[in-house]
Length: 495
Image (cartoon, one colour):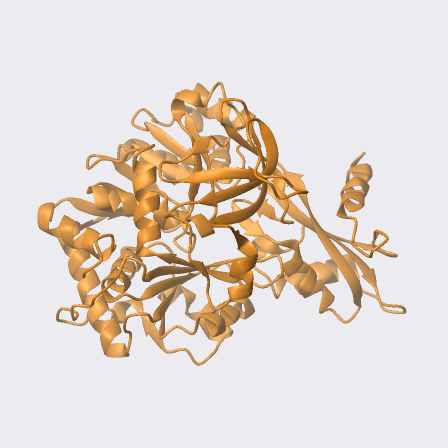
């Protein structure tokens, strides 16, 4: 491999220098660095036999598993991009992403065979048990700017977009994280985030394997088990979304759990409630807050532990190698000093663009900056607080949900004339969606029927908590739906 930053080098280097050290600890099984490197070589050999070459895509449908890690490193060695599909999606959503990405092969875990069969399509399939061809893969001239991931994110147009992330993006975001929240070869990382999220790879896991640390990899997140593992495995660091820490704090075992080894806990995906930060602080654990997005691979802002108490509610300052700015919402001019505006990002961690979507890429970038669509406040010390969203984004349990996608599904119901979806606060999930619909003249549809309609076409976390049938949606003079009035109506109904 000629690229100096390519990720396939990481596992080969570790297999050579620390072959017997444990790379993955999963449900009492251990995988060493030498074994993980060998697994990825055999997986790469099988992918080549299946027709995968440099520049191809390899999709996956699985929970967290060592074989999935080996598949990523196999792709990295071949110059292919991994397209990790979410097992939380509805079959029609999986089919859309497969049709869009056009992977050479889809590798499916046994427990998701039925979901895969429901999605259908002509993509070639393999089981994870078939990624075991004897022999070494061919040497491939993998470059730093070759794609490593193709991660689908929900879009404001209602259709997910594939964000391309390169080897270099992954290298730089890992390096910047390490310079702020270091991981050493003696660290033990608890990984509970799903590997269909970029946070399941690029926040701690890949950095841990680069450093020679051990990753305690959990197939699914169970609060009581996570708390127990921290004590049993002497976990030193972990990453989660606010719901991760909420569910752990609410578990009956939280008060007596042994958290003495946990030196660093990182949160992302959504703002962390101050009360929850205080709950963990009382147990002696300071939560490191941050902000990121898939298109930035994902790390942008970080609030280190020493600032956690005096800067509650802030996302922090930029990581090393990352530049940020604020853009005036009206003029588009860059703002100086304390200000509020749209947050812009640039740096070697920022993606090259969306898969086969130059228009969306152009809309997301301007003058060398990535336009996040998020509104941030910057104080006199240069710390940033995420104040709101220009994008009509709802973050539910750390999952990004765009109302436009739900509205498209509701509009497809024969009785629905128009629909609008808003996010409302929720104690457990941070936010959930509520829909307002107006029916066609003479048509009938009960709210429960519309919720069920969404349930058959959307991932569970996207399904509206409630559907309210109204005579008409409030609109401005130019026809724009006034979602502020809908939020006011929802708040008024609660009183």
